Image (cartoon, rainbow, N blue to C red; front, top):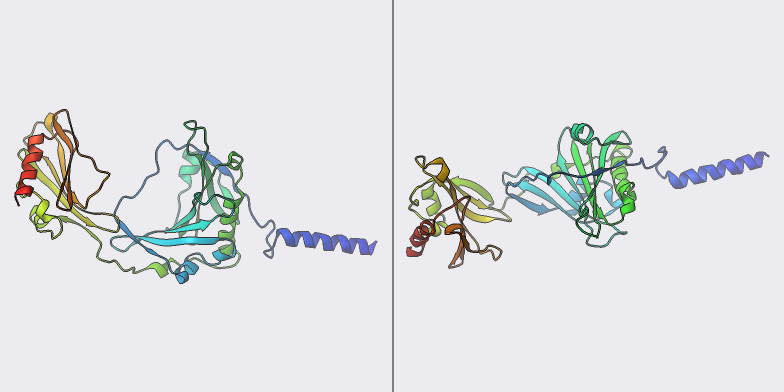
Length: 331
C-alpha cells in the first residue's frame, strides 16, 4: 500500500513538472479574457515626422530580455521624433503556426502609468489578471459583414516596469475569438520573465540616437525662397486675395517637402474664405492633376525633377494657380 502511494505521488509530481516548468508557478499561464471590440472610429495616430534605427542584437536583448527563450524575432527597430525623443519600439515576431503574411508584433513605449478606465468604464471590457499585472485583451473583426472572408486582429495591452506593451497579431480562425493560445503565451512569458525571473526591460540603451540631419522647421517666405532644394519653385509674389499663413519645411526618413499655406486676406467675406497649399517635393506618381467645376481644387505640375502640388480646401481660380506657376516657370 505504501509503494502505491509513493508511485501516485511520483506520478503527480511528474505531471506537475510537465505543466509547470517554472518553479513555484501553478498554473504556469494565467488565462486571457478576449473582449470583442467594434471600434466606431479608426485608432488615433501621431503624424509628427519621425525617423528610426534598426536595433542591434545587444539592444534587442536589453529591450526584451529572455525573449529568445520562447519566440523568434524577425526584425526590431526604434522610432524617434526629430528631436531624438523615443516614440516607440517595434518588434516583429515569427509565428510558426500562421501564414507568413500574418504579421505578429509588439510595440513598447515608456510610460509610468496606463489608464484602463476607457476599456472598463466606456467599453465595458473585462481585464485579465496575469501574475498580478492587469491586461486588456480584445479582438476586432476587421472585415465584419463587408466581405465573406474573415480576418481578426488580436491585441493585448499591459504596463510593466514603466513600459507599456502592446501586442498585436492576426488570425482568420473564428474559434480564436474566445481564446487565443499564442497571444496568451506571449503575454504570460513576457510578464513571467519580469515578475518571476527578474529580467527587466531597459530602454535606456536606445537613448541619444544619431539623427542624420532630419529636421522640420517653420520658415518665413524669404527663407523658403532661399531653400537650396525647393526654393526656386516657391512663388515670391503672394497671389491676389491671399496672405501667407505659414511656411513649413520637412526633411525626414519618409518625407521631403516644402509647403506654403496661404489663407484669404482678412477683408475677404467669410463665404469666400479659403486656404491654399503650395507644396514642392520630390516626384510622386500617386498624385494626380485635375480641375473641377472651373476651380483648381487639386493641381499638380512636374517641372525639372520637382513636383509642385496645389491644393485648396474650397476654391482657387485656375487663373490664380497659373499666376503662381508663371512665377516659377519664369525663374
